[in-house]
Image (tube, helix red, strand yellow):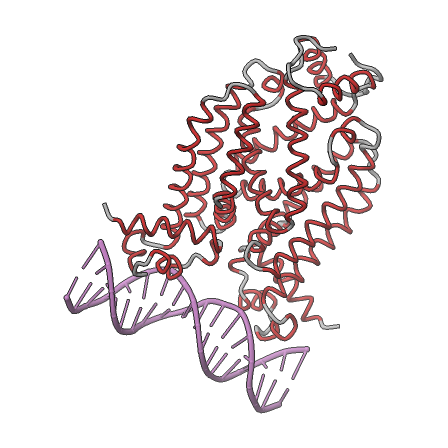
Length: 214
Length: 214
DNA sequence: GTCTATAAGATGATAGAC
DNA sequence: GTCTATCATCTTATAGAC
């Protein structure tokens, strides 16, 4: 198999990470790969085609890499710990920024849309599996749709990444309060059967808040 | 004042809404405004300058428009209702998509970054004020940083908007589970002093989950 | 303020030699 | 598979007439 393909894929990913999808032109990518510009069209047809390949490979690599770590998680606090570490690492190496760029470009490019769809599906599948396993028979699983939460989380992190580039301090504050919310989630999740039943009944017919519940 | 300026600003916003910031070239915008392309540079110096003006005006218009509605909100359920309606309307008219495009472009364009920073600050300020007023002396206000939550929410909605363009069904599912979480938030927020103290103490020294809390 | 014309360069993509 | 050379098109931005 051609080493040129791999070089182009890697260069494409790095170009998007560094300079965004808007600057990921055939010439810019080829220059970074030390490869002739025309080869992009020979191997991938279009620039979008190359970007799609880069997106898919990046997410495949990442997901595979974290699979073992995620499969060993058994508790919600443990999941939050691994999740935080995973997100921090992905963010540091630029993969989250890359995903955000692909998502943005996907809004008006069907090829990028397919790539971004694949990437999001891959991550939410992974997250859904762990979250579902961890929350089995706990309070939160009975209240919320795990798949929906996984999707909301993935999407939210994309937004937070973009927000960081616009207001780093604000993003840090947002992350802190999400961590606080995670603590609340743990507490709610660890409710005993009595409190859990109370919460669920309150969710059913929540209209007038009772003054002093127990 | 020049009507051309206004026409260009409106056309720029609409171009970003329809075709994204990548396609918002001087010629594309000028064509939509039925105005000569060179006037963009005469009035705004650069294309980014025009986009910045468009971003600022769009967010100013929106924020002003919702100010009265938001100022009348007094309860958390009421806030969630207004918030949902606001978000749905902004989404429908394309303002959320526009913001997402600006945020993406902002990652590698300092002028757009300034515009996006202004827009996010404007919204979070507005949200923070209402949320702070509504949550006054309630459970959630004592647990979480209201400003951080406002920022996290704003950023999350940007991510959800991008996600929608990539997987509309997935986005709908994510929104539903966020609505479920909002219900939980309402219940937690309406906890009486007894349960509230229990929750807070659990948050302080949460290590071994007690089997049956009350 | 607005126009035409144009510079100066980047872009995606292809043809054809090797 | 890889290269050079090139086309047609698009881009930002400016000069100068009106």
